[in-house]
Length: 422
Image 1 (tube, rainbow, N blue to C red):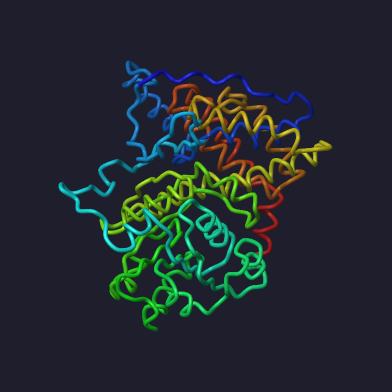
Image 2 (cartoon, rainbow, N blue to C red):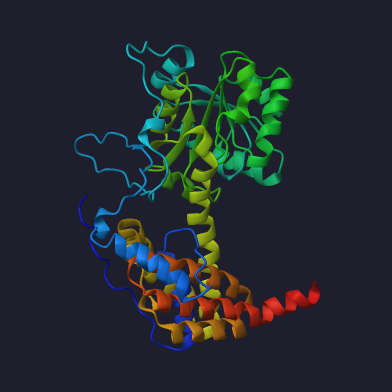
């Protein structure tokens, strides 16, 4: 394994304390991958145990640390004269290549829709014209295969506007009519609605034998489509690891997007064909690990939005005229470094053991933005624990930092207010 390069020292705000807090919340903690928070607040004895465990393995270099197998990703081939598409790096995970559907020896040629999908257009119906459904349907419609989108189901005004924008000329029908009109049914409804939609369509007879039913949920695998499979349909889970706005900006982001795929042997070829038409890459996710896969994406992307918003709030309170402009170069560097260097990307007062700086942060946050205090404390504890296990923070310093973090919650105005209400 090649030794990872140490990241360059990031921007360090040396102005007022609250300005520094905002930069640390947005940058220092953003460089920390998600991990299990260990309870080190009980004192020096607990963290010393961790230190002893680390010392036992001190002969092993950091670059040789055992890591779980990474998620297997199939990248599309790059033809001569073209540049590789941008590819998002997944962090170390629990998915392995052994979970990828294997091709049996002497695999026969694909039949029916699978062969059709690989060579010509497919009649596609979409149920759920939300941010994801409308964009994916438009991308498939404009792909080299020229898939035909025959009907869409969407009830809200926003959904109908998206259909008019992305899929002009495509009729808006009831879900059962959409299912009956297509060869491939794309279900892009919210996770909690997916089971009900599959049940309803199957019970109504709208799903038929030999049809292909594909959903885009990150959480669910194939089991949620069991009612459709019982009707003889071939089912597939195909989740784009991308955030969507529901605008044309999304179309430009699809090339290079990774799709979390859970497929049967019957739908493997179709999955690869659809992802290729979208200009993406496949990541094979086992049925039992879909929720964990989705949790990694949500924790890394959705919670990042909350973190950045809170950091901008703190910078605003500190008097910064343009918090976004202040954070953009710092966050860009922190994210790039974290994806390339993992824990080595972490900088800031916690990894340095600056207890008094952390205390100053906590005091100013409690006074000016108390609703941000709890997330700062939780992420601060996780950061300290990772630094101890990484060998860059002495357990005794970590214990002092975690004690300060925990103490701040017991006296914060926000927490006191909640306790009075309850």
